[in-house]
Length: 163
Image (cartoon, rainbow, N blue to C red; front, top):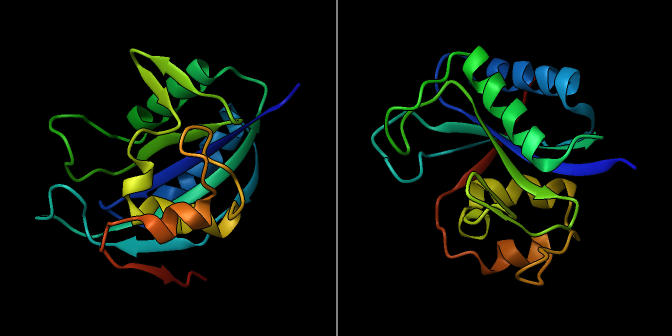
């Protein structure tokens, strides 16, 4: 039985759009079919604001793998693409986060699903609401549009056109 995982991609180093496209191809190769992808969005850095703006995108991936394996694959792809983790909210070539895994609630030392901070971040909710406006957050009981409407984050999230 296939599972569906919503994934947030982010990058603010090098050619960020190409980094997201590369990550999506690697996810399709290792995780499963990309069923849907949002537009690309640019936003100022969140947390550590003294860095380049980020480009973000949300993907919906159909997979046969369990959530923990999806996490491991995401981390492997980040490493393959040159990501190093030195400090929180640092610039990065790629960031791959699991937002939802089906409608499951997962609490493990290495993985929390739904993503624990997604409802606080417009750069996550805007692309998520584009491709899954009615998906219900299994803990908060609101859909993506409602989460976005109630989000206190004021950072502007700008849709960017890509050829």
